[in-house]
Image 1 (cartoon, rainbow, N blue to C red):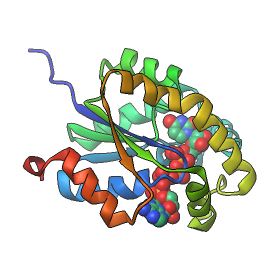
Image 2: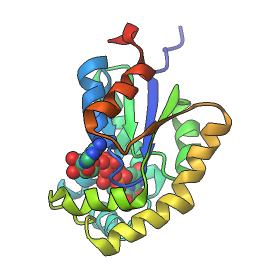
Image 3: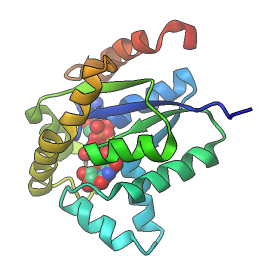
Length: 190
Ligand code: UP5
Ligand code: MG
């Protein structure tokens, strides 16, 4: 019999919109495995892989890493998790990412969770984060915003046209945002 496809939810939103923060809460309540594409890429740099320098340079410039690299990391993490439901955070970031993921894995997302946040709020959060991320400086932040507007928002619009986007107002306290997130995932799953 054919294997059942895993459930995938794409968690999207601009840099600093709170994707990682809310994913941590969802994992606690709903039993998903959280896969941050950015975290996987940063781990790949640290591991000293042959792609590490290329990835590091692209992140420093706020550019989108070629999808074959990111998709391989996502597929490996999915296999290693042993789980069958995933929050894929910060991916797909452009049309090429989106089409390649669907083609390579055969998986379409159940829905897209979109954290809607204005740039001035995201900028404030990123400049305050202080976790030593090489892309949390004002020059790179501006580049990340531009790439989000030009390349990532079209992906959200693509899924919106398919009525797959669940949009969340992300300019509120963390707990209040999570209350809205819970409504989307549903009490039955808790
Ligand atoms: N914070 C969170 N929620 C808050 C709230 N409601 N009120 C006040 N403060 C709040 O949050 C950011 C900060 O804000 C934290 O300090 C948090 O405490 C606070 P976080 O949850 O970390 O936001 P998040 O949306 O996850 O922000 P992040 O910076 O991780 O988003 P990006 O999308 O920019 O980063 P990511 O790691 O996904 O990607 C980084 C780079 O990797 C990309 O620019 C790109 O170069 C590369 N990349 C690819 O090339 N391909 C990919 O598929 C993925 C990444
Ligand atoms: Mg993040």
